[in-house]
Length: 112
Image (tube, rainbow, N blue to C red; front, top):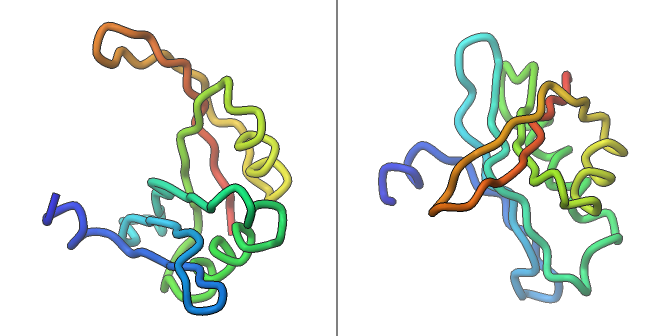
């Protein structure tokens, strides 16, 4: 876990001094590729532009960034709609076995 944190870049969203969400990115890899490992906002703060700001901040600050990749569960319609609205495009769909269950996921990319 510590190694993962050391290789991560985390942006935190605050409202009135309280943390309301975050976005967790990998460091920039060869070719300017970055992985958006997680983005989360408390439900009452969704739809207010905070998620968009967390993506925009990474694009602004991460040197050499050319592409942001993310994996989204195929059934996560809210997430898929959010990322599509932010300019992410479908790369591929795949199945991932996790603890005896098959998770259907979508790989997306945003070129910046």
